Length: 187
Image (cartoon, rainbow, N blue to C red; front, side):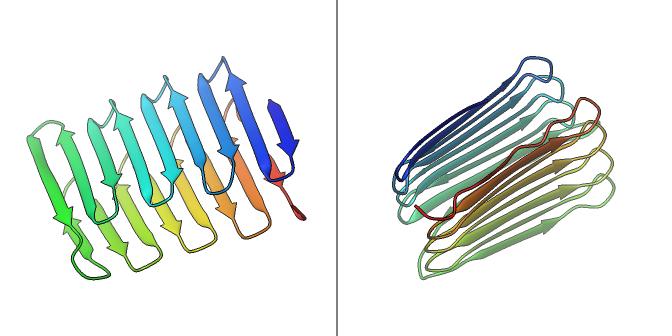
């Protein structure tokens, strides 16, 4: 683990060869980058924050689910691909018109739920799935945001919070688990 702190500039890097997970956080104003790779569960999570631009990518080969979110100033694209015993997939492309929108979709059997909301200063993403399920949550207001990723079995949990003067990072994993917590109080 490497931590660099210089005033408002903070860089956190975590490498774990056994779980093959890489976490990188760079804070310089509003620029934040989070990257997670896990080869065991075949999950890739990428978050790029630069102004209003965010990119969230999740790949899971076990459940064959791919979730991609691209957010520019007014355009948002959400794509979910699922191919299990029955090849069922759909693609959603949404363009923001006023100041919020909501998407809800449910499926029985190996069902999943998608919810996407956005107001003038935040949005919320939720994805759940039974059996080997996982949960994704992304919220952002004017001065903080929250990222959460959970998975059962060899699951892991990612949490990032930030207010005007501090942020906290927490990463846990069962079995060969690890935990990271970082708080900045003053600058």
